[in-house]
Length: 219
Image 1: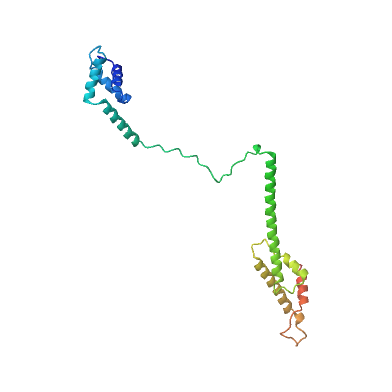
Image 2: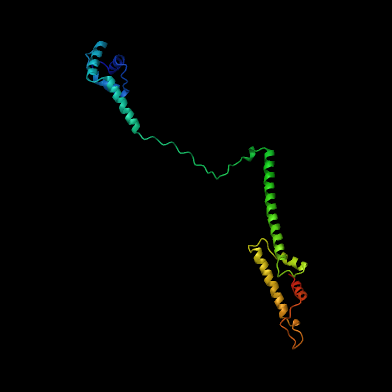
């Protein structure tokens, strides 16, 4: 080998500084041209070999072509997708480290929870009370049950279950049916048929007797 590839590289960088050759391309050119000069050739002799090679194919053109190829290759490579963020559960409540919560905050939190429970209990109690008032008004407004004594009506009111799935209207109708049946039983009894041979289709039961029957039912 007349000169070393390192000598070729050194002179090429000096003589053609604008030729931005890649290291791989520079190594290939140096290996190709190193055998050309005579043994012990000086810089001028090496430069002459470089000039002859540059006339055949410009080093700057080679560098520009290499840059173009590298750009095309870079554009053709698929871009890696950014890593997906770790999934989070939006519904999961954030856990609070109670050890880091000051005592006054714990007390405030406990008081708020107790207050919320009290408000909920008050709401439920108010709803129950409103239903009872409604049931009482419906009982008082019934034409069929208006003849009941107040104390008996109070007992019958207690029979209405405001928490039941059965509506208040249906429960009132059941009481009206029951009362009507009792009245009919009283009307059908022989106590109101009068003396033999003197029966009358217009005989009506004594309301006091009906009330006594209802009262004695212990309901």
